[in-house]
Length: 281
Image (tube, rainbow, N blue to C red; front, side, top):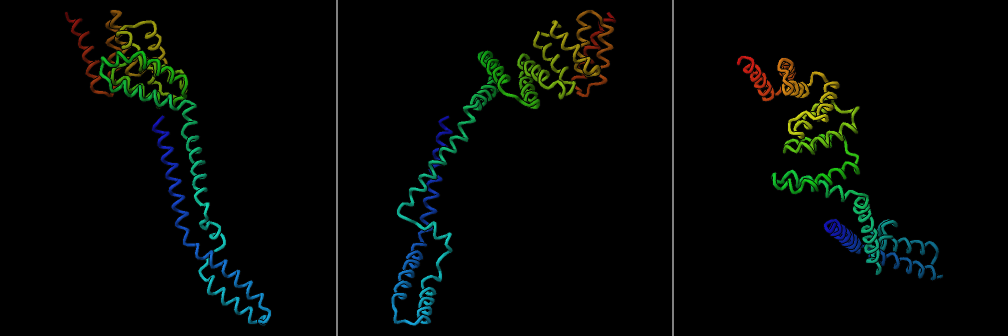
C-alpha cells in the first residue's frame, strides 16, 4: 500500500516538473509577443498621422510588419506563451493527475485485488517453505485458498497449474481441493484425464486407502476415460488390496500399454512381478 502511494506521489511530481520545465522552455516566445504588441502600437500611431497618404501608410505598415513579425509563431502557439501565473497550471494538472493515478491504483485494490495479491504471496511463501514450516502455515493457506476460490473466478489453466505446484511438493489435500474446484467449475471444458488425477490425489490424501470418496472419484474417472493409465493403475491397486490378483494383473497390463512415462511403466511392471512371485511361491 505504501509502495503504491509513494509511486503515485513520485509520478505526480514528475508530471509537475515536466510541465513546468516545458512551459519555461516556451519563454523564447516572450520577445515575439512583445513585437506583436509593438507592431499594434506603431500601426495605431501611423494611422493617427493624417498627413500621410494612404499609399504611404500602407507601405509603412507593411514594412513594420515585415520587420517585427517575420518570425512570429502561429496564433495557436502564442496562446501558450509564458505568463506570470504559468506555475498554477502545472500544479492543477499535477493535482488531477494524482487523483487519476490514485483512482487507477486504489479503486481496483478496494475491489479486492489487494487481497488477491496477499493470497498469491501467501501461496508462494508456502511453496518455498520446508515441510515443518508448511505444517505451521497449513491452516492459514487452506483459509486463504478457500477464500480465493470463492472470491475469484479463476481460469481453468490457473487452477490446474496451481494444483500441479501443490502436487510437486506432495501436498495432495490442497492439490485435490483445486482439482475438485476445477471439475466443479469446468466439467465441460477440461480433459477427461483431470478426473483420474483427482482420484489419484484423493488416494494419496487418504493414505493410499480406498475410502468411499476415492472409490467414487475412481469410478467417475473410469467412466470418463476407461483407458486412462492413472485410473487403470489405481483400479489394479484396488483389486490387489481386495485380494483379486488376477484382475489386478490384467488391469495393470492394460495400464502399461497406455502409459508413455517410462518410470511409471517400471513401477507397474514391478507390481506385476510381485504378483507373479506370489503365484510361484
